[in-house]
Length: 279
Image (cartoon, rainbow, N blue to C red; front, side, top):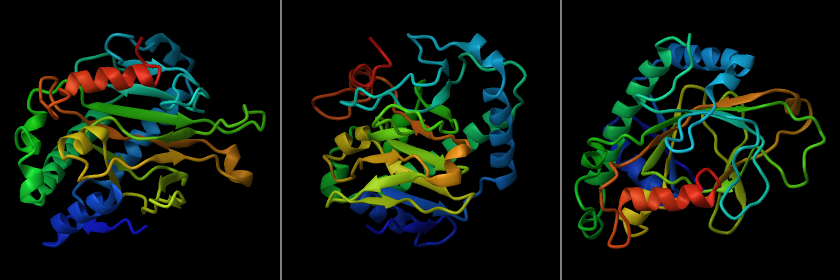
């Protein structure tokens, strides 16, 4: 499986990016405008947050899905074993940790702006018969959306006594249109190839890994692939270290029609129930 690197500043960038999403469901964006220093600052802020007992005061709201989710809150669809992670859901206008600076919101805004550009690339490079399936241009689907989710994840060190089959993030697909992931603090992300083999997703620290979500797959009639991926437990000494990541899940506005079968909110509610985050 060849996940292409798309140079944001190159004239080939849009085509390379869209081709890779079509063929593999993933792409790596290099030479983008988001500063590494900002990514470093956000990681440092949240590392301190997860190490503090104050996180327990920010328990998530079951209705809004915003706030802190304790260790082993979530399972992948059709997998009863809980993932080995804790995380915080950042939504605009919802609960946010006291004392955290503006860096998180600066990065959120920068990633959203980049995401709009990337969706424009996808829209412009979709074949005519695929583009006809979109109920509106892809970037326009974001207008008025309140569901864009900045998820800050902490995968704690492993103790060696974990439940059989438990890994940091079991095999799953994302729900949204596209996901933007600043390269994580440690390896572990893998993508499943068409033959069933697993491949490491390589990205230099500072690159942005992007993948297709189920909503874009649905809207494109499966032209763009929502590829199964996972975060595996590291071997040896690496298992004794934490891993942090912070994907931005870009969602359409609730009423956007993805296909004849689903609006965005209908699709989201169904999937949240399947992964145990909504009753």
